[in-house]
Length: 179
Image (cartoon, rainbow, N blue to C red; front, side):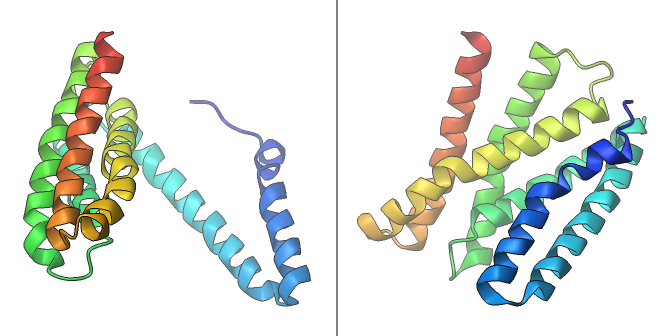
């Protein structure tokens, strides 16, 4: 594992501090921006420690548990634009996101990268995060308003947008991998 010197790491704070200065000049209240910056740094440090622990783990059950939580959360996030009957649609969204994303993750980690062992945490967890995020967000962001308002489908439109987003992500990843 590579260790990043503190001086090099502190360079990433330059853009954040620039934003704080801009906010201070616009609103003369830098306290909220400094608070948000401090909270972000603390959260990233804590996440870094957690990821370091997880990536060193050799437990398939722990990796499967983390992937399960990631799937549960991604299905909930996919429905973020649905204000009504969110719980009724949750299991459909979970099925749509789960089937496609798990198949993609298996294909990429086992057929393309040939991860050994299959649950290699430093490969599986980051890839799962990217696959789940891309699959649930990209197309869903575009299709939600089109199907909900443009076609007048309401909540059903949001569900169909989620299903279509996952299916399209699957086709896209397969094309990238196989072509």
